[in-house]
Image (cartoon, rainbow, N blue to C red):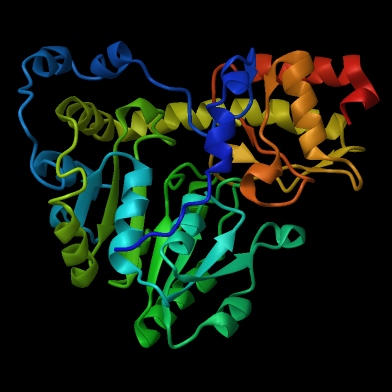
Length: 379
């Protein structure tokens, strides 16, 4: 494995900067309201006692069996042995990219999206072709456009569904057709599904990639939909034996085991996933009512494709207005953290707004007051 110089991760550099960390109001959050350990342990009568008695030895390679079994419950046809656990979604992405892709391979990756999904392959010397989502068509792409880009050297198609930062998904027929193509042509479909199961209409939930085909690889994590980013726990699920074998080969050198307390708390959360997800959907539904009203009031300057899933949206400013100017002045003048689209390598007309936290109503009100107070100065 040879890796060229990595491009700095723009969004992370911004969100973890001293200026961003000092913000009073945070509209950047991509996760649901974080749970606290006390509330998580309260989900089971004996959970606190069991947690206190947990041994802090090495868990099993790839995740303890009881945790992998609970993860497999998120899928229809995936078993515990088809799941491998990592220290968060980032490590999961790194493991797949470095074991499956080689210099000269061709991959197609939808954008805008999470930077790791394209910067890591680029650093590995992979021929990365970006497939831009069409905002005017609800942040989707034409399947025919993707098919036209396929080559004999195509090793993977990389998707993010539901998508960060737009909240988009994909038509079911096109999605299933893509897996048929993968089986016929031999490429893998890697789908970042970290926001899956947080659709506003559950009927629109796509099948997991790992359930659709042995050519599918699903990425999941506890961070976003469960509100547990502090656990640093993610996973890959696939029925592809070659992918699994390559991932297992990396285990000797790359986070062979995961934190035992994180495993125990993740298992507890997954055991009560329906309750946690229902609470988060209710929070999102209420916050979206506020955001709908906000967007209507400011429609002369801000437009959007209303997201159908996930925790965030990607509004656009009116032509000629700069999201960099807006977000930098909001942070400096009003203490409001709101990342602009330059941190997604996607021009200077959009910004990402998260709406899945308890503090969102207060933060949105602060944004409203800043727009009223500073007016044109912000733009």
